Image 1 (spheres, rainbow, N blue to C red):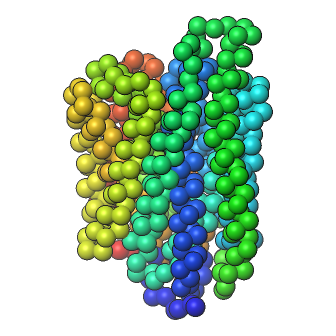
Image 2 (image 1 turned 135 degrees about the vertical axis):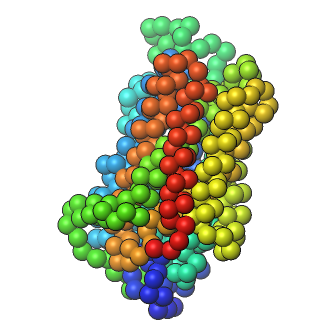
Image 3 (image 1 turned 180 degrees about the vertical axis):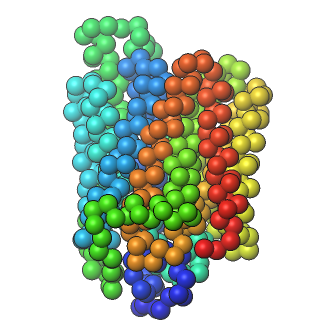
Amino acid sequence: MAHTPAPTSAGDAGTEAYVDAPELRLFVMGLFFIFGGITSLNDVIIPKLKELFTLNYTQAMLVQFCFFTAYLLIGIPGAKLVKKIGYMRGAVAGLLTMMVGCLLFIPASQNATYGLFLLALFVLASGVVIVQVVANPLISLLGKPETAHSRLTFAQAFNSLGTTLFPVAGSTLILGGLAKVSADQLSGAELDAYRTSESLAIVHGYLGIAVALAVVAATVWMFRKRLKGERHEASAAFAGFDLLRRPRFGFGALCIFLYVGAEVSIGSLIVSYLMQGHVLALQEQAAGKLIGLYWGGAMAGRFIGSAVMRVISPGKLLAWVAVGAIALILVSTSTTGALSGYSLLAIGLMNAIMFPTIFSLASEKLGPRAADGSGIINIAIFGGAVVPLATGAIADLTGHLGLALLLPAACYAVIAAFGHYARRPA
């Protein structure tokens, strides 16, 4: 059943009508759950690979660099693919690509080569990008335009549910398998055998995910003709970049770059940060399980935020939570013990509404160019590659994780400015 939307639709996903299809809304929320959970597993893999391959922080952050570089390279091609084959078939293509990435962990483990793990993560992320190009505008299509901000935030809560549950399970399976010795105590054939044995925990986890992705892809394929009246505006290969000349969209794309970079930087360092003697002095597995509190705060905040934004300007709320994130970083880096550790984890609550709110504010009035806009936004997620790498480099240069966290704080300052700028409708 289709309805005529309001003239000022907030990103009507490339169609002139919104679709009342509850089963498709559930499907899209399931996609948010899957790609959110898979992305958050990087926070668990980083300390594992850091130990196995005796990496410094900069080298360990190459996990995030390779994963999020896929957004830079696949964002536009992914949008083109979705515009050519449609949202539902595009989702299947993305899910199958993710499955291939998971299966590539098998040769990576057998060869005990860090570079192959990075390649597997890049392929996995390429599928995530395609699925995300589908999910963000599609959730705007599946309901009334005037509630698009709230609906996208609610869907992102399922993304956060995945990011909360996956690290807890992953910490038990992946970090729990660490042996009594460490890689820096071994060499030669013993080191290779140790790396191969210990990386099997990663393989087992991703094989399970691969099976689940195959089932979901088959289910989505059955519904491939369910979405009627889908229409996309034809454009040249890189036509979407002209959207950056729109001040609101360009500023919003920059903030997506900075937000993802800040969020990923903090998540990637949580285990190492909480293991420090002056913070919580936890063992690796125990610290890994607390990653769930960081992402769980984002989940709770998105459910709350989807309701609050019905009465408070999304832009104003965005500015306030960005300021709150800065305050929590300053508290964490200037204190010790439980206050230091849990104030860092509480930043997840501040992150809650940021991505969906920045996305929807930046995408207002894109109309049939929503898919192009979604592609550009997905390129901006490349911030998850750049900012964590820079944060890791600062940590290596200064030998102080607290100082490195000042870079994410600077990112939140720019986001606060965008919230103030976009506090009124486009």
